[in-house]
Image (cartoon, rainbow, N blue to C red; front, side, top):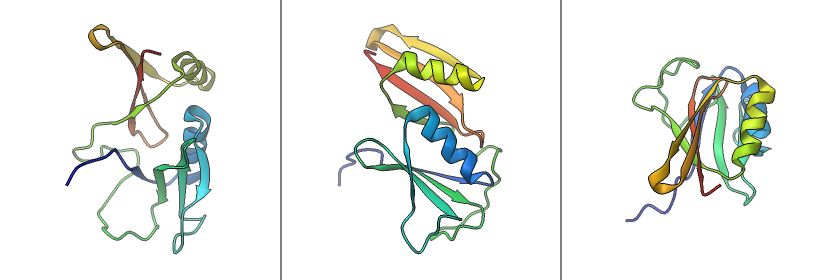
Length: 133
């Protein structure tokens, strides 16, 4: 077995539309309906430019194969953050500023990595990584 890449992140929310709008506006992800038996009322998937569904957003009442108690906006167990490799550092900062969003930046000179840390509407911490950008 070998891990090829991060497949997706799943977020359970009581703000499906606001969460989808956040990821669309900040990261240029495209909102699409999740496949059946999920419905547009209980799930939406956010696709990158290559057609990969990298963020799955589910409502609180969305059916799940593995169910566990989740409270949107609170800590999510051992999950600290979700890291995404990105491009367009300056554009991302401008989008965050336009939203009035809270964020922090970091630079790791040894590997040429600029980072932006921000939270989505559900308090999921995002680490946006920009290598050589």
